[in-house]
Length: 346
Picture 1 (tube, one colour):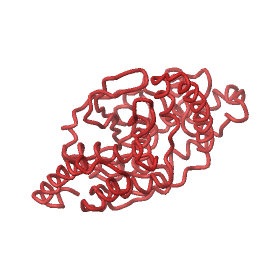
Picture 2 (cartoon, one colour):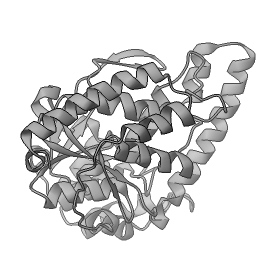
Picture 3 (tube, helix red, strand yellow):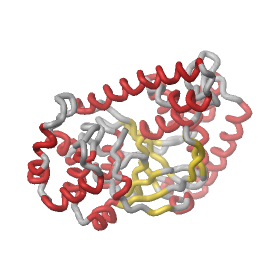
């Protein structure tokens, strides 16, 4: 789901070459779900091996990251830990959405409506523990550092971006990353110029959003941005306040300024929410303001070709020829690392 404040956020399109030599902390779950929802067959079913195990995420990890590494970008994948208790509402709503999507998918399947099948099938897949474990295995075998967050991956990525000089930006499609205080957010991190959606192809370019530019443009501070997000709706209160959109939320935040006064001003609307949708704004504010995070040191992983082939070719029936082509590209990357020296790489 994620936070929708797109209308308000100043952004700048960039070229992949602008990120050469920079370390980026990737919100792993966000990107893996992107792979699961977009890397699919004509009827919308995900890629699978001969045992019907889903492999879309592994395909995305291999091809997307080899392409980015070849451009000289340095990646650190940050994985979610234990989700805050408040997020259970979002999980329940996603479960309901999957149930509805399954019904719609089966109806479309009976009609042999491939477009509708693809539209709803992307909502059915979820990451399980085996997928997460194998994703970490493959990333590390490719020489990419993996960080295990104590709680929210995007909060950890934002924290590392904020405290470590060597980290240039966080990578996610979700604007929540800004509420966690990431100094820079990169969206659409891909070399592709187009992305296929259920409504057709859309033009995409990588874009950078700088937190300070956002705050300056909106004439608010970070605490007020968090309040704005809560009014519109976050993963912790998905419905937000009905009737309050992005622009109205900004007006309220700028008028009342202090968090207590902001939420006092809309107390009546908050109380009109159903019991299931009602929320404690202070709890949510604290989750963004003081998330559970840790400092970590990045490890420079060595490329393990045998492990990559074992995971992809032997375990999941990937084409050996295609995997070998990607391994050749990884060898080139490794050679460049040796020439520069590991200190320059990490």
